[in-house]
Length: 182
Image (cartoon, rainbow, N blue to C red; front, top):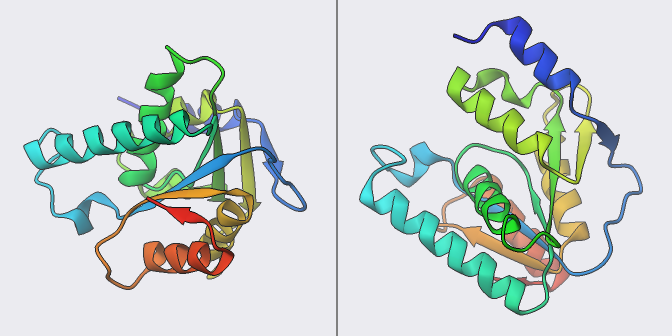
């Protein structure tokens, strides 16, 4: 069982950097997509979810074959997390690839279940850099996180059903910037 103290210590081990003026450089691929509840999967072990994860994996490998070695995740549950895990899995065979995280606010993890929080901090601990967009939650921090990712990206891998929301807004930002979208 995890305690609140465990998560405070885990958060304390992460070295956050401010996103102000940061540019990653190189060929960077960002991720966006829906959270699990919007995708309608019964569980992460459902056949449909496993198929989606395998498609994410294949798309990341395609991006790597096109010269992308840096990836950035917004660390939301669902697609962001699954894509980050796929990058980390690939990193075991291709140590030159890098994973970055853009966190909208410091306590983004608070509404997650404990098993999700453990996963969240495990991923963050393996990121090259963790960019903190805002100290505290505010109405704009999620949009600012997405804008930061798109500003630093040359490619966007998206799981998107056409509905309105954060994923839709991120795809629109990518289109406006003229970056490729898979």
